[in-house]
Image 1 (cartoon, rainbow, N blue to C red):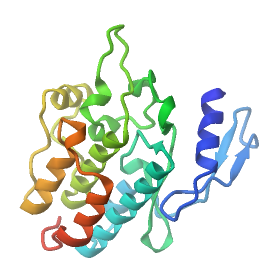
Image 2 (cartoon, rainbow, N blue to C red; image 1 turned 180 degrees about the horizontal axis):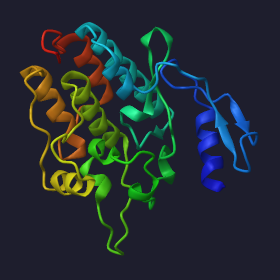
Image 3 (cartoon, one colour; image 1 turned 135 degrees about the vertical axis):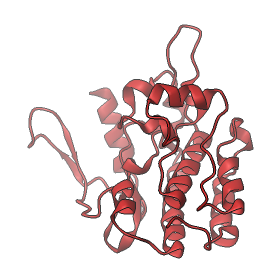
Image 4 (cartoon, rainbow, N blue to C red; image 1 turned 120 degrees about the vertical axis):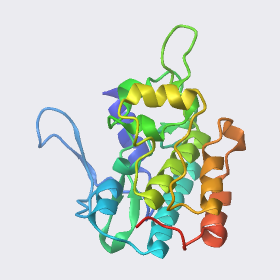
Length: 233
């Protein structure tokens, strides 16, 4: 229960419009402790994007919401560590909110946790940075998460929002995705992603974490350079 208590403590102190709030905890649903958050009828970002056609300016707003939520987490020295569309919910009014902090870590505490056994959703490896799968000398799959690995994951979210496809949609096996990412491969450019937007996504996906854009750069890009004209049909 120590990991769960830490998750509750981290989540409970967060307060931001783009982060799903924790309302409390309960044992009312069985013998295990459950965390209670608001019900968001629009569901996850993944299902929300599939539900309708969205104007490109609204897609930019969704991405800006996610970036603001991520900036807030990082300002609180919290790494999300498992950022992908199933961990982003959409509230009334279309506001994106980050949730599911099962892998979120207070910065000094993240070492030595296994991504493969702790990631909340099968397939989440498609959004994970290559350094997350670093193998330690003792053979363990280490959780080498950081603020910059969250930025890598955000690049995958931009890709999906603009293209309508998950990263590596042509590769059905998660292990093959991991091998491809570690070999330096990245998803192919979709025709619905403009060159300016694509170059920024590629920066988020840089193999060198320090070469990825900072969150202030991401905010600036979304506000100024992001091209509305190219978007998924």
